[in-house]
Length: 122
Image (cartoon, rainbow, N blue to C red; front, side, top):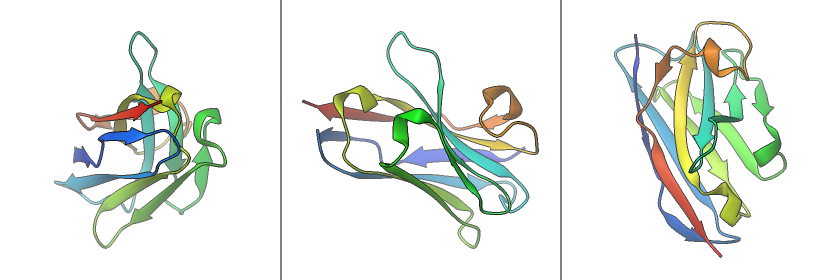
C-alpha cells in the first residue's frame, strides 16, 4: 500500500491557476495508474483526470481543455495543473493510485490521499 499526500490547494481568484502535487511514499508509482478526483460540498466524488502507468492522460468533463495531469516517476509525484479556474472548481481534490481497472472509476483505486482544498473565489 502506498501513502499519498496532496498539496498545493489554496484560495485563488476565478481565472487563476494552481498546481496540485501528490507525493507518494512507501512504494513506487511507476506501476500504478494515478488519478485526481474531487468532491465539492454535498456532491459525489468526481473524476477529474488520470495518467496511466504508460503515461497516457485521461480527463473528465470538468477539466477538459483547462487541466493537465503529469507524473514524475523519479520524484514519485503526480501533478495536476489547473488553469482558468472557475468557482465551480471549488472542492477537495484527492489523489489516488490503482493497480488496474477502469481508469476513471473510483472503485478501481485502492490508495487515497487525505485531500487538498481548492477554493475559487468569484
